[in-house]
Image (cartoon, rainbow over all chains, first blue to last red; front, side):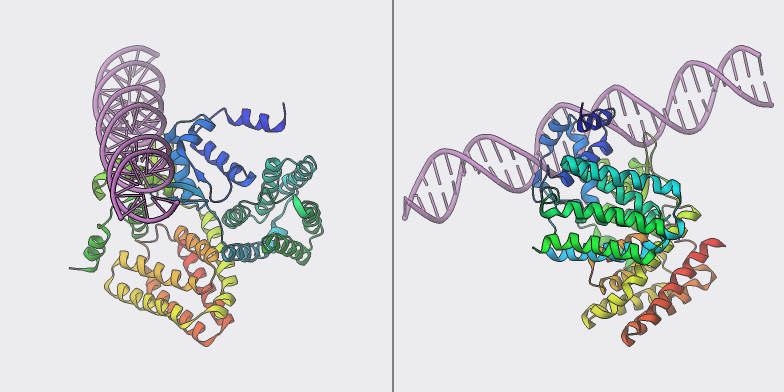
Length: 219
Length: 219
DNA sequence: TCATAAATAATTGGCGCCAATCTGCAAGAA
DNA sequence: TTCTTGCAGATTGGCGCCAATTATTTATGA
């Protein structure tokens, strides 16, 4: 049984609304639901084996989180970000993440660094196997664990939200242009900077990481 | 016909879900629904003259936005923030708003300043009349208009969300201790700093504004 | 052939119903 | 008296149904 099946089996233990919400987020991040595609309620209900009522609730919540948009009497569709909006997302991430760097350095503990190192290695493994969905998950796990270091749940939530928004629809385009190797190297560079207590170094890596990401969309 | 009735009449034109959501937000901010109070579906449906279905949708979305919390088979209740969480909210606002100051200064235009000045005066009027709900609305309008100056919708949304969270349950406690006069003065000080192009001055006022607010909860 | 209009199919929106669950109260035993 | 247990009332959770709206296809006329 491969990783994907295990994940699915574990998750199937409770097929409630929040579970479906997470599945839809993964599906959007992994490329199963591309930007501008319509999310039909019946189709999702059948695909995930839940009732349409549950689907409606999940879609409603996702639209509140601005992950998808709602058009009355038309349905819900995956949101497409304009170039301007992507620039704003990147700028916002830059603002928040650079400000978090000194907090992370001041409040980090070894027990908090554990999941960071783990997710860092998992991302590398997923990349070597070319599993897009696993890359999506482990990449988020890495950045999420990193955000925890700052010891401020509000800031962590903000930056997590910004990242999820900005990475939408990046699934199919990620593996190309050798961007993955660069991401892996930069992840390790972040860990090293934190271990060394180098605030400026961490900020530099973060800035390059985000800038490189943004430039993917300029081409 | 007073202001409140006018607002109500205008809003009643369409009693849909998003309308109810806004009413509930206002109700929570203005003190109608205090922290820890349960929001019963039937009661809200009757109070606002909508069906329970609409109420459910609005509650679901509000809980996604973390304005309220959902306890299965118990219901939805207004979220109470712990002291630690308030500190984190203030710290997060400080981080984002201080970083936005130079952006606001660089991108401000006179047409964008118009609503800022207007809301600033409206807040003063509402305070002089002691109308808590109007103060809540105009204060938010002021800060919202201010956030628009930075020319980044993502950052504006983030800081608006943080402010709304942090000000929950502040309605009844606001008018006391002369905090209102201080808020009015600081609002005008922000406008003046922006007009003068004084970034450091703006950041200073913002910092004092937030610190004073946080200290209200320490006593 | 093309444009327009009517009819049909597909999808979403809203509501009422009933089961599942929790709270509060009352009755009984130690 | 005090704790436990069972019962009644109230509230929420989930689902099926049908109306409202939109998209698609078909029919009609110039």
